Image 1 (tube, rainbow, N blue to C red):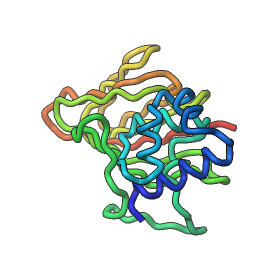
Image 2 (cartoon, rainbow, N blue to C red; image 1 turned 90 degrees about the vertical axis):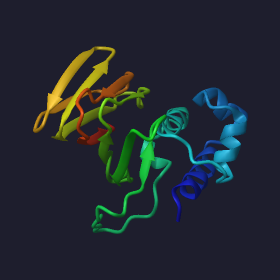
Image 3 (cartoon, rainbow, N blue to C red; image 1 turned 180 degrees about the horizontal axis):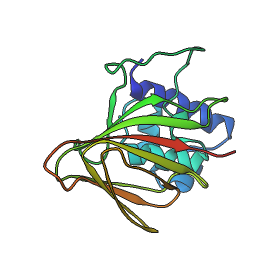
Length: 183
């Protein structure tokens, strides 16, 4: 099933579980009622930040909106995850593992083109983000400070605050991200 249809199904299910109208969810998420309606009908392919805003409005992890059914043991091949983009195609995120009732984290592989940056809104309250640099150099700007990470470096930070990923080099930046949601 294509990602837009999965998001549409999960959004409708989560909104109905909470007895929220589109108008109420619009107020909670900061996303227009018209856009929420398009997403819920499967007529839209929302950006990462739009999905984050909706997830925050519903008070669920990001991947709850992109969740499909998962088996007990799952192998994810490099060709399987579909790219999600930020505001531009220069930032690509591939979700390998989503949150489940027994897993309170998400695992992403991320690529950021040379000279590009991507601003991310804060994630849910108490969320932590773990970053591991595979190739290149990442400059991470947060409301609490700036960090420069190179190949093999790792960082954990409070991801409930806004943060920006920047690749100042002329090579493709590759890194892994784990978003952790403590109980």
